Length: 273
Image 1: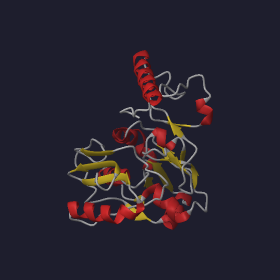
Image 2 (image 1 turned 90 degrees about the vertical axis):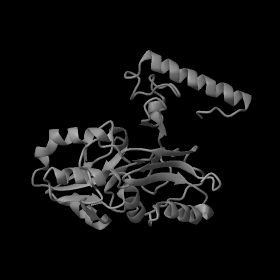
Image 3 (image 1 turned 180 degrees about the vertical axis):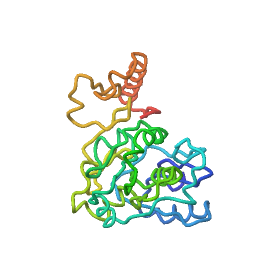
Image 4 (image 1 turned 30 degrees about the vertical axis):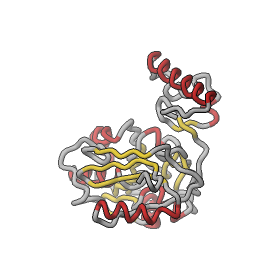
């Protein structure tokens, strides 16, 4: 991978492999062969074009769960919801007997989501079962549509609901990114921008880099208005986290920012930049 100048994050676990990475277009086929040979299986790749690397470095992690839900007996390889293509997904959104669940975290859904979807407002995916217990009566006898950025979290969320006895479970095939890639959002079902876990921070409905940057302290997407707030300090805090972060945390972030500035002035690369 280093020889091919791959950057990004690879997560490997008993459940399989999940990765987001960037590489030169002419090297992609070599990467595809490399990964498929390692896994000894044909992996589904979802491609986007970008002018630069979308990640800073290469990271390979081993985890118990690819996406942590923290629940026993979750087996998405055995049973998940019914996959819907964009046309069928839009029909489900328009069905008055359906409920569309945004399984992503609050900082993701805050900047964009599907029309009329229900936001779980979780801070991490492990909180999804807690949200379900509080809202399960609302889901009774409904067609339940679930979506996330790339379609991974939905695999577990849908299996979880099936284990809880719900039957009419549907998933957006390939997630938001694949939906926008295929539809160009022509029917305006998607509203806002899509949060992504790389240097672009957000994508618009044309899958171009969006208008958001990111707060180093809380990782939330922030816009131009946020940067003009009295609570915003570059690399230290933003309006969304200023009151949540302790003085000790802010001091640590501020020292990091100072060290990065010193490195920049000396013309050397800071390890965390």
